[in-house]
Length: 294
Length: 291
Image (cartoon, rainbow over all chains, first blue to last red; front, side, top):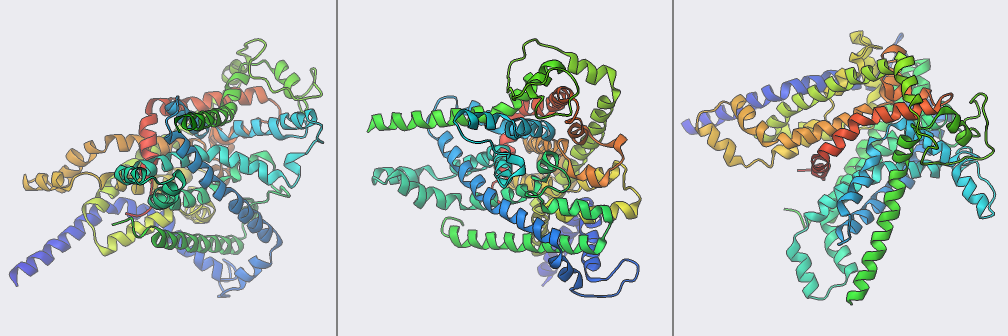
């Protein structure tokens, strides 16, 4: 009886201590993220900061009828659907290549990571040199007797940005996959070798299984980063690019008119979509990798 | 059998080489082109940036790596004749250095808490941090804007620094590092009568020195190149970092833009070259979201 009470007291004391250490961070997160986000949720449900009438879903309905929001959401979705799988698969391919015994491995790793350092503005400059109407890529096209394409103004613009995205993020993703690959138990692969398993079998039956947490993480990370590509698009084009009008453009432009209801509703929708996506990916990973964990 | 392997490896090596060239090209171009004179740049890229005034403008773009004549004129213009650029550079430092120091500092205390004590509530909070970390900037932008307005710090540096300090990224990463410290180490210190703060500063922190460094590099690189935050939260042009300002020089003076971009790259490049191993370790440890 006595020991039980002691244990409980010890537990409570531990909880207090842990809160002490956590409090600076928790306080900041509370003030700068959680509290204002609650207000954002509240704003998304009222009809105006002045009148404060509760309108429930009206703001969301308005948002879904808003042309520029729909366009931005569609473009962002299209970009992510295109770019994220590519970023995952290509990074895995790079990691697998660097796993093989080839010379200059560590140099290659450095090179692949180097895009992380380059300031956005100069990336954009170079992309303009490459892809503008009289840019280098078009020079090549002319050389092979193909017509010029005005890359950034055409429907191809999104592919140009996907390229930029891949260039920027593949190195980072590759490192994550390399770490994942090095965590696969060597004995397992050796046994597979002895049994005469093919490279393909080894990859799909063993490596990919063990990589599933990494695949999940790289997917989430690439998804987040696909939302960040706005920087480059914004600098490559302007406030209202036709083919590349992304959600961040919508947010920035709405900020100018300070339409809190629209902004809040958009932020809430995005947060909901992200949470659902993340939980979904977690569930997939749980289902896929359950027999290798624990 | 063996021959086949050689062939495969040769192909892989070639592929890597092609990729490497593609990956390096923009960086190398930025640096070498910064040593070209404005006249040479005009003749190379005149068609694209047609708002360049005067001089010979070629009909075609001429992507060139090596300048005809090495010229430091862009650097002297940027550094000596217009103090603006140095000012913006200083702005970047003023924004990023406090964020890195305090984010890592506060995160290490929080990570210690997540490492040392487990429980339902705390793992719930940790999971919440993970979700928050994964929220795209478009979601946190509105809350950040509102807080800055209430606190009256909108359009000041604090509007960027304070949310930056509390970003949960470092907490997440550092917790993953700290959980690898053998528990016996902490336990034995406790037996020796060390208080929690002592365990934290004398045992935990020295154990994850490399982790702290790697996280600092990652946070630095992330904030050094920020664009979105200042566009909304710090519209005062005098206080904006060079990362934002660099883009506004694209139009007229590309040479200057290349030179300033090169200068701007130097801190992250130095950190990268010095701490690549740490950086890689830092990225690698972010490997999975759970556990």
